[in-house]
Image (cartoon, rainbow over all chains, first blue to last red; front, top):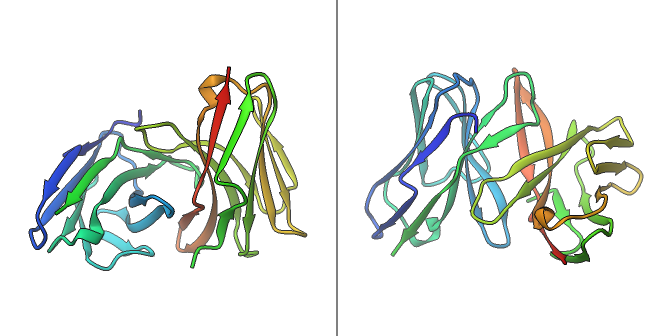
Length: 113
Length: 115
């Protein structure tokens, strides 16, 4: 399973509150990604990281920030959650040397009321 | 907007039949095209990829065809099994600088295999 865990797995929060989702990997992969998945939109890239403290924006980065202070953890933060951020969030890692093969975590279902 | 999309949102087949899932793309600059499978309650799983300068690639029970003339990608699954029931996503991968690539996913096709 490429040693990827996501926490929490489920969260319900209120509009305006900050939320941090954690992605943890145990295999020292360089590239990590955060996606959101919504009905009718498939998976959309929020942010990605190509190393410690090296991150870049994806196609739907507004309202999200990320941090990667160590190789194994990639954090996604919603500074002030909105109902439009209700979604399932997936973290992924890229397998070394395989640019097309991303391995996904189990997902976090976030509901913003 | 998205450059990768799907012709049909659902596909139902009988067990043992062959399945064909189609995808249209608009970005001719993509370097790779990929198929992912997502089972209910799980994250997507890589199935097979094809480089943009290839027409066909075969894997175990799966074949991906790329028609650059009409910008069409398909996934063929031979002898479809109940375990193949899932949502299938086509995706494109494009080099974005340095050693970075970015995946862009289509919306998905739900494949249902009937016993």
